[in-house]
Amino acid sequence: PQAATRASLRSFGVLAAGQFVSLIGTSLSSFALGVYVYLQTGAVSAFALTLLTATAPAIVAAPLAGAVADRYNRRLVMLGADSAAFAAMAVLAVLFLTDRLDLWHIYTVTAIGSLANAFQRPAYFAAIAQLVPKRYLGHVNGIALLGLGAGELIAPLVGGALIGLIGLGGILAIDAASFAIGVAALLAVRIPDLAFHRQQEPLGRSIAAGWRYIARRPGLIAMVVFFVVFNFLFSLPQALITPLVLTTAGPATLGLVASAAGVGLLLGNLVMSVWGGTDRRATGMVGGTLVTGAAAVVAGLGTSPLLLAVGMAGLFFSLMIINAHWLALIQTKVGLELQGRVLATNQMLATATLPLGFAVAGPLVSLASGGGADQVSAIRWVLLGTGVALAGWGVLGLRWRRLHHLEDGLPDAVPDTEVGSVDEEQAAADARLRPTAAVPV
Image (tube, rainbow, N blue to C red):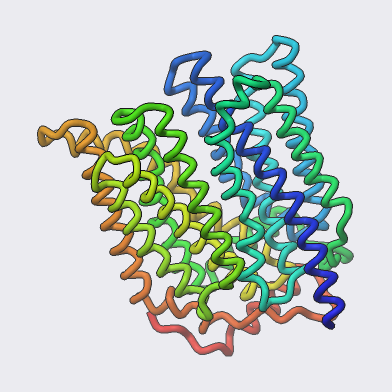
């Protein structure tokens, strides 16, 4: 068993290293493309469209992507997603280097990248549970998310300099190379091939089953409701801190403040890698919201770059703590053969309010400034209010027994020696659920 554990951890290490490099390349190209679009057009709407095409396709495709991750070999799903993203980025680099790049090319490629990410992420996170023993999930989830933190730290710090040194084409080539490294890592590992040998249910039924799985479990419904509100509130400081910095300090300071978000992501991932999280995963998942609220309040206390940097670091530090606990909870409570659909459906439902938060941030500032406050003061008031709301939502979450004690109402997933059809596995999971004591509301 110890030799098998070491082998599985080595395989995870190779896989995570490839994804780490790929995520850094993606963060660099995302930063560079946003800068390029804004400098070419001078229009905020054109820049905002890059954000929309980079997020909306992934949200819409999430249920299908989760069903695919459960129906097919997850390693092959990740290979397909990374290969598609690699090809799209390589084409974009060629278009730029041949002076044929138009804005619609950028929007198309960012949409393709978003779709590729939608398929890659649930397959990756579900595959982790196939590779790593349950007791290590809290640790390895921090490691798995490390590339995201590194990318957010590196991109603002070096992206601007790289644009001047090697241009957009060079950065796109770096991103394409990073995808190639991710593909090479996938080719070098083997993931246990579970639930992919027998005839599966129709794909449409798989998609519906993701919704049905969550709907039959009140604890998972409570978790979705919690994150719907959390993500809406979290999107407000995401949307407002950048204009606050640009209004009071300028682009150079913005790079430093944005890098603080990367520092927070890295610290959160490193803490989870060492700590592993709370014994009751829901405690860390919900309790982390208190830190998020405190960080938003710090960001709203003044216009000092130090305060804003500390606020940004705290926001993304707590986000990584929350996400790592959430992921470990799903990996522990949902069977390996069902995790793709549940992860993707849960993520789609929970993140559906992010665009709404981005849309109402401006009107909220206008509403706050209606009382005579200037725009900077109005942004600060919205940040302070958001921080209080986040902390209050965390307190309510800890007091909501159906959410805080959802693990008591969900039995740990029991992997079968021989995995049958996914429909059979979901029926078995439902049957295991029935004898479990209900968790009070």
